[in-house]
View (tube, rainbow, N blue to C red):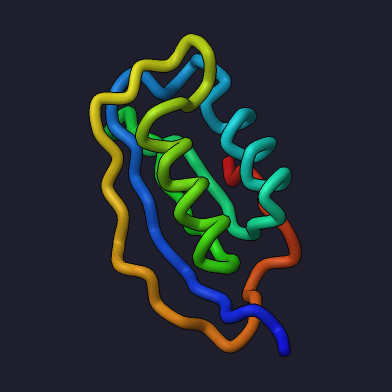
Length: 97
């Protein structure tokens, strides 16, 4: 049986632009086989969407809240509640410009 898939939105606040945050986020998401995207916002945050199994999403949430890229400073990370999805809507994880 296939693993149940979930989708979640996130936004990370702090010093997360100009510190390769998106690049590291993409790398981490791909290591966990998650799909979705992230992008810089005009407000100086990074936001995005993630899709994948619950365990991997929880691991990614922890990473977004506590790790980030080496020179980033994370003040807070906000997440939507996980919603079950039937199938992936993204082919992989990418950075939106």
